[in-house]
Image (cartoon, rainbow over all chains, first blue to last red; front, top):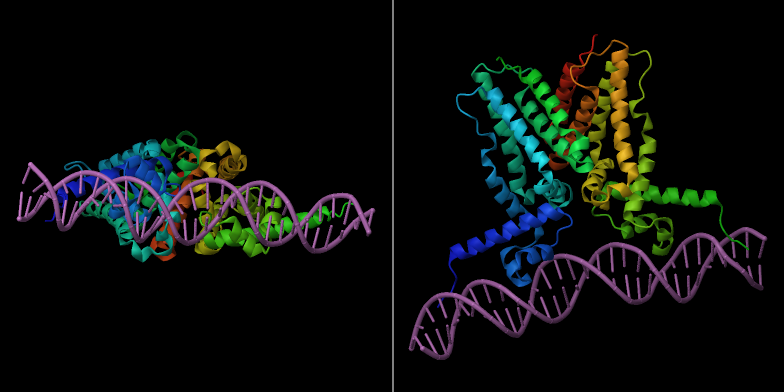
Length: 205
Length: 205
DNA sequence: TTATAAACGACATAGGTGTATAATTTTTTG
DNA sequence: CAAAAAATTATACACCTATGTCGTTTATAA
């Protein structure tokens, strides 16, 4: 009895499906991706696919989780270095993220936040808000650490700085979608960001 | 012969249709609005409606133009006042815009920029990029004016400041959609914005 | 009246969703 | 080593919603 294929196999297959879905979302965005598109990309039938995922939002959340796993280390600070250096490094990282915007999930993510069921039904997607708050906290805690170490003496509340940072980066992404990397002058804008951060955080070198 | 109703009548009717469409876009956003929704709202038949507009993008652009007309005065400066005061006033205006975000086209606009045909076919929508560049120029010229009058002495290029401003406001909107007005702490963030603007522009009081 | 612009509503088409049933593969067991 | 049983996958279907067009009807200006 119980012919059941191994659990690892199922896990593995699901992962493959998620990878395929990610590729499609990167290519076509969230709004214009259908279940069929993903099935075609993954080379799987309707029936099989629906046994793994209930609907496209479900697929997207799974892709999001998978993608988040890849960049946990985002705010890992280099020990021994001034925190300010780490922050500069993080901003530079954002730059390459935005440079490679066409090869990233950023577009699909923005679409998801604006146009999916999530908008009307936030309680059904706890992972999403958790995700945001975690990012804010991560940034905030770096600033706090800097204050404790006497490296920073911010003029504005750390929480506001953190939210400001995220807002700005999000806006920069939006503009880049709208106008392209060059027209947006991402570099210039990120330099402006660093300038303002320095003014707010007031690091002692 | 020629039963034709007057041109004013047609113009007037078109305007009514645009108003109805605007209401629907405000309520349902861009992505989830269908032609049928607008027809229902306007109380007009398919055939008649299609004689005014070719497709939904066409409708949206017309709504956008109509909406833009309403707030041309955005950056009109109060004569005799320091320019810095006008800038502060503009930021406050953004605040009320975002407060009333549920009653505005902002959501639909963001969706349009991310999910409409515009994304793949920017050259077919010249009005959109024109619109953006004009905004940048308007902001930039205020800063230049301030420089000429000796009121400002910016540390970063005016063009970068202008783009930075727009990016940030856009990002703030996005976050507000995602989290709501309170959670986003729009006020705090706009105060941060003013702080950074002051540092960059370096106004002499 | 009557010619004709304007408005209406049915239709053909298309693409997508989720499910129910059939086919296939895998595993267990005699 | 069959061959039955169970899990997995494939296919076909029923249903839905939207688009843009087209033949018809309505209303009006001459």
